[in-house]
Image: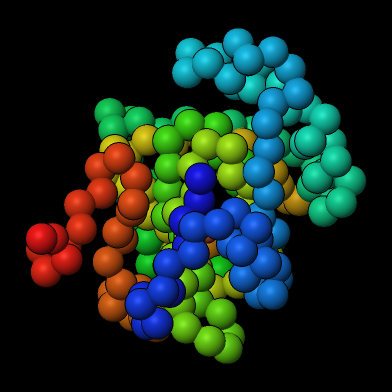
Length: 191
Ligand SMILES: [Fe+2]
């Protein structure tokens, strides 16, 4: 399940409906999906084709709603060649000319969102979570300590997905803290 944190307010939201409502107020879509096909289609050794087929109905629905034309599966593991370089493209504040739509099949990741009004918040997404960050939204992305994510991506135009960096430095004020299985609370919070 996703978790949402607003560091500046020391507040965490864990209830999926409350997370959805918080994000909706800020123009970000958030949903929980379950596969339409067989459970086998989403086993960790499932092929990209099998994953796309399992979620085909939902993907078609999203395409119609958001004008997305293509879908693919990104598959990142700790030993993925060039992983650090790949992550470094997205872990400082940026925006895109098109929506960033991700449905997490396996693993997890952490989006920080910097809305025009209000504090920066972090949303940790994991298997079953769909998030749509609208074009133009300032954000950055980190993997969690397990460095594992497999996600369906949808594109309006893949060439529109180049990041534009704000170079604001805002991202440097936030730790990429995940709550997943590898999360350890800061020392002062342990008892
Ligand atoms: Fe991005």
